[in-house]
Each structure stands twice: as structure tokens, then as C-alpha cells.
Picture (cartoon, rainbow over the protein chains, first blue to last red):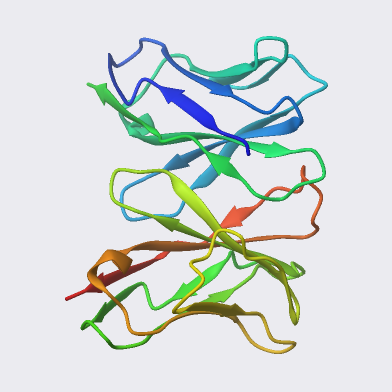
Length: 112
Length: 115
């Protein structure tokens, strides 16, 4: 089955700096890669997603890149703010599937 | 348009008791998914249901756990004879369809504590 690895597990940055979280997946049949942000005591919230026919997608300060050949995808947050502090999860879904396979999460701390 | 609703938000049970977790999907969504999150870990898929049907329960333990999504009312995740290892956050998600690219929207979760 699909397996998603996520790094780093913890990331601390200074306000205004960029943050990068990287994920790899194992099954080349995966075609949809959402990213979720989870704040303390809340459920995961979708922040951006990318489909396998796209290499990069950007939404204001957040961007995601996908390299299908290498089977890895990354989340980039620019100009970080304290409110970006949360746990971020990458995920993958197989073509024709519905199970969301999550990475283990990255705890991001943005220091003011 | 209200999001995915889950209740209760917190549930405390003693070993051997039953836990019932409820999930009301977003309006217009007929697909429900349940996930379990252990402390400091990612979410693990448990079960996928459509109205009155269990589509995939491959992530759900074979014993003590069951799920339903009746024609009327919320989806229910039921855990019988709870043990301490069942303590976790249980999240429900819903989507409008079953395509792999249909976004799943998550509820706030139910945090189960087994004493």
C-alpha cells in the first residue's frame, strides 16, 4: 500500500523567514496530494492541494511543488507569521481511491 | 453552510464501557470517512461509508469497532468494551463524491479518553 514519509518532524523559523516541508510517497499510482494544517484541539484544515498533472501551485504565501519522477512533493511557506505555527500534514491519495494516507506531520514554530 | 459536525467533542469512558461517536457531514455530502489520530502521530484511515453502505473498512479493527451511516441521521462510530489503547482523537471527514480528487473536509474531532 501507499506510504508517505514527511520531514522534518519539527521546524522552527524566525518570523518573516521561509519554511519548507518535504514529503515522499511510495506508490506511483497516487495522483492527488493535499496539505493540511492542524491547530491545537482542532481538525485538519485543507490549505492547498496539487494534482499529478501539475508541477507547481501557489496560493498567496503558500506554494506546493510535485516531482512525479522522484515521487516527492514539498510545501513552501514564505514570509512566515506567528499564526502559521501549527502541525502540517502532507497526504497522498491513489488514483481511483479515497483513502487519504497521511504523513506523520511537521510541527512548525514561528518565533516572533 | 455549516462544516462537518462531530459530537461529543470530549468523551471519557471506563474500560469495558461503550463509546459512540457521531458525525454529521457537510450539507450535500453523502460520503463519510473516519480517521484515528494517536498523540504525536498522523491520521490513520479507518472506514469509508456512503449512505447505508460500508464501502471500505480495511483500516478498522475487526473486533469491538463498527460504523454506520443510516439513511437518516449522522454517521456513528461505535467502540464496544473500550480499552486504554482506544484513547485517541477520532476525526470524521466528508466529501461530495468518491473521486480521489474530491476534497475531504474534516470535523473538529472527538477526543476519547479511556480510564
